[in-house]
Image (cartoon, rainbow, N blue to C red; front, side):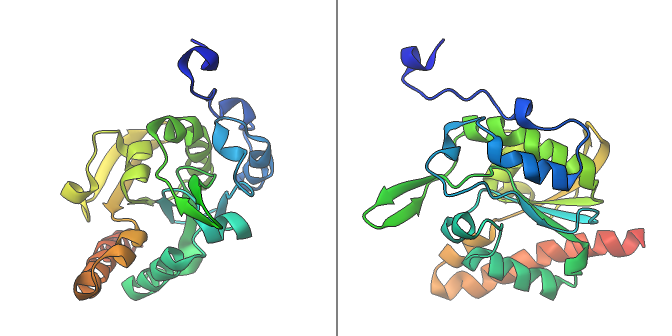
Length: 220
């Protein structure tokens, strides 16, 4: 069924743009050409990843925000700064971390001079998933931290609920072999918490990340 019939834009998926056998640098270089879904067109640029390409921990979020879209680097806005602080407090070495998102372009709704975050649809998550699969295959982290519902849909299935399983160690078989996932909330949810609940929400995020640190410490 064509996009003219459905009234929806074509979303062929990213696979044809993902270079076979490429390392992280090759994946990052190829990503700007991706036309796997329509989100590339209004976005400023693709926002791929940052951090150690041989990291023991991969942090996977939702999508770039307004600041990330303008700077081209993931997790440099308010939520990213909060996440960096939580990672430090949990005792995880930032040098052991790779950060990326399930969706590589900023989805937003224009409102005057502002661009308001809009949650990616399942079709966007599915279209972009080949990039994430390729990244994790190359990086091969010991633990993948799943930050929020969008990342969970990409990595753990559409029916997975982060709120039911946050802080748990989830073992799954993947295309690269067995992998351990630790789901938790996206740091933006901490920022959205009411003032009188924000400290508690932040402490819970740190506690979940300490589970990750425990896995790393046990592995040596």
